[in-house]
Length: 193
Image (cartoon, rainbow, N blue to C red):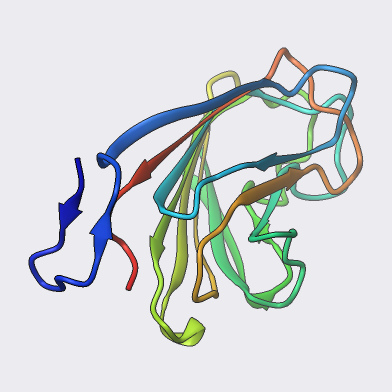
């Protein structure tokens, strides 16, 4: 079954739209501090990463989770813009960057390995033929149920094409622990020209 888009008869999707479970990865296996998820299909319009019990093995010297993406390789150019915050009791802090070489998913002030979060990262395609006018948009929400902290991140990866990989890492080099799992799924459908 295929879909012809009513607003552009030249666009044809050759498989059904909807969500597809892609992988479930135990991040606590082997003490890894970085992981690349590959094989995301070129017609994906939304990629969702669900983190169960995200934590790292030692205190970090800044944010405990960064992210990049790409197509064919991981893009480390200055094409990422992001803003994140944390909410702890009645106080909050924000930080952000434009034309950076990565996304900061968790705020840099919460560096303790004692934090254990559950969260979701949603990456949504809205690309055009010009990278400066569209890209992949990111929203992330994490909650630390032990310390009552809530994190939000929003950003954009500036590109005009698909992604086939997402790279996450702890910049301090500490391994993921607490039996952290990342479940990745994708959706196909419109979201690009």
